[in-house]
Length: 161
Image (cartoon, rainbow, N blue to C red; front, side):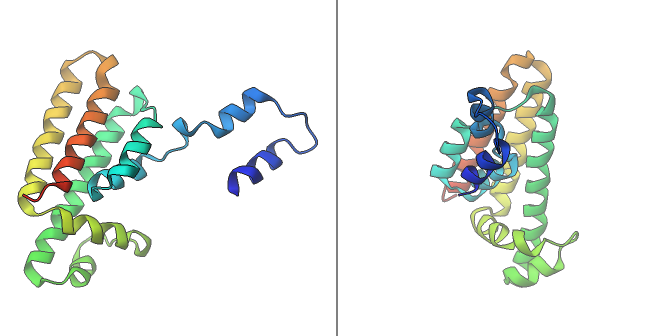
């Protein structure tokens, strides 16, 4: 496994230091926010729950998180508009600019099926409300606000309307 290889490489010819080992295996900082975002927009409950429990969102990155979510909603909006026009997801993916990287196409395919135009508008409103809260509240609530937003977006993705 990759984790075992990391440990072997880090401690090559060394005594294993428990603090370094814990830091290396500490998943809270190893989860990529994009993975959290993708599980949220794809309506993948198990992955979202696991990731939400294993991540610490950094206060200094709060606007990065908001911008990341906003960018995804914008891309889903562009994709959905093209999809409505051509009724073909592959044509829609080829038409939007900037292009979707080939490796990201499966996740966008999954997400555009979950997000219609009305849901996207609702998602934009949720994002706006969260941003207002972040700008008007004490910083200590930022992580809670973002995690709450991710759950609300997941619920919207999973809903039938």
